[in-house]
Length: 141
Image (cartoon, rainbow, N blue to C red):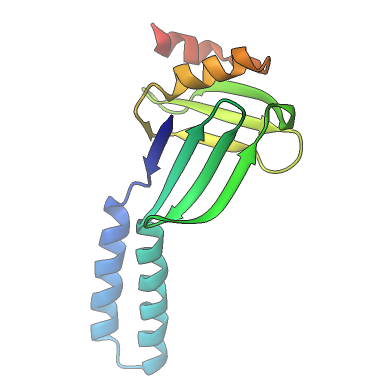
């Protein structure tokens, strides 16, 4: 099953507009170049999406620039130490996939919200340790 997360971009668009106006008001060429580069980085950041595919044999975590995958990581059950379900905000559920080697993966703001049930099912099928924090259990009610 495919799950998607898109970064929150409201504040980034405000920064892009601010950089644009600062570029117009600036008299020095170096400042204009700096604001153009900064606005470009912010624009690229605003179109980044994250996709998680839960397959029968692995979890595939992809970072997309538009619709083009730029980073793809595949986690097989023997690479995953545990899946930790936790509370990330006041009403936000989240998960952390802790791997044996490498950087742990944080799962927050994915749609559809059934991602946590699918991760739980995947961990039960593959005998991966699943840990639910006390705060997460409060959100489950």
